Length: 487
Image 1 (cartoon, rainbow, N blue to C red):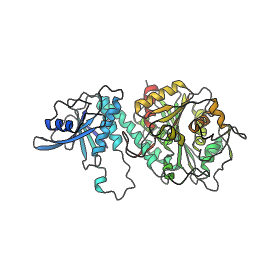
Image 2 (cartoon, rainbow, N blue to C red; image 1 turned 30 degrees about the horizontal axis):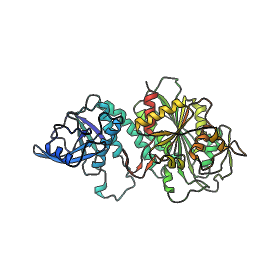
Image 3 (cartoon, helix red, strand yellow; image 1 turned 60 degrees about the horizontal axis):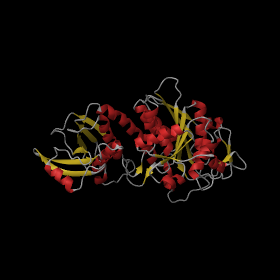
Image 4 (cartoon, one colour; image 1 turned 60 degrees about the vertical axis):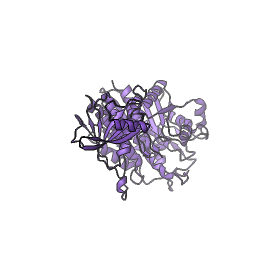
């Protein structure tokens, strides 16, 4: 979707006209018919609420929409503005209208608030119809451009920053949406490399031979049952001070997860194409940082494998040696994400000595049982880092909830024949998974683990997404960088 800024509304500009309305504050210049219609329809300007009517202006009948932004002084003001923009895209996206005008004449919105409206509109408008060849015409996306009339000074610059964020979210959604016969470790690398070309991101790729030489027995053990070779994708962004140690984002990229020999039930297995949501979020976040030229040094690492159950697959009971030298008894081959992450985290620490490591993974079904689809789980060895991530989650809308770690949980993954086993008991499954990853984090290294299993895919529309891939993870990482790594 294109966003254009124009000086003011004029008769030559066609399409529906939208006004952004605060709660209980209908514009005083609104035509009487519209104002009365809004009141009769119980439109009050609540965030995301929408009213539509038609009025005669000169010789034309104009389609007018009022989009509610919520209370002007609300703590979550930006979220309310995003909902207003999203409501407009949801209404007009497949309406047959090709253009929409947001009229800001008389509005008191700041440049940053205008950008929030546009971010909501663009994110909600995203669709992926690549494989739909017989879609009825009245279901096809039609809205191609939003024109903003009378925006305050600085709005275009503010939107440029949020447009970069939208680019990242959309890349993540695309990667998560694509089927596993299209996106697998090699093609994930190709797709992301092509998308970030020209942004200033430095791309490195480790193949399976190189990872074997490095001793990544845990990650490669997951991949050995697939004809698709594993890859480690590295995206480097050096926008901060020269020589300053980077922060590292590490993503689990299991491009399809059958469970391996510990085969998952058939029902719902098709969803496991999005088991690379953590890696997808890292790739999207790195694109967003590069597009907006973030003043920070950040490394994004994507551990990419496919977990399949052929005759070469690892078996329950196998023991593998990780890059760290620690040995792992593989009790359940469906607990594979942590095996990918442990080697990716070890390599990242050795290669970059980051100031902090934040990993993201669709790691455990237990997280969905705990938090449903409302929050991602947060685990950390550092209270300061945890607090920053919680704040970034609240500010961005990618909300997080912190869980405990401790010796009592850690001992549940001790193995009688190896240094550890890859699963504990059924109870506290998300916590023991985090404890497993923590065993590979260097002493005194700030680290956080985000279990986002319930957040990367939605069965119903949300605030700024339709059913399907949400792009979760990009916004919380971007906000974390804005608030803590940039001056």
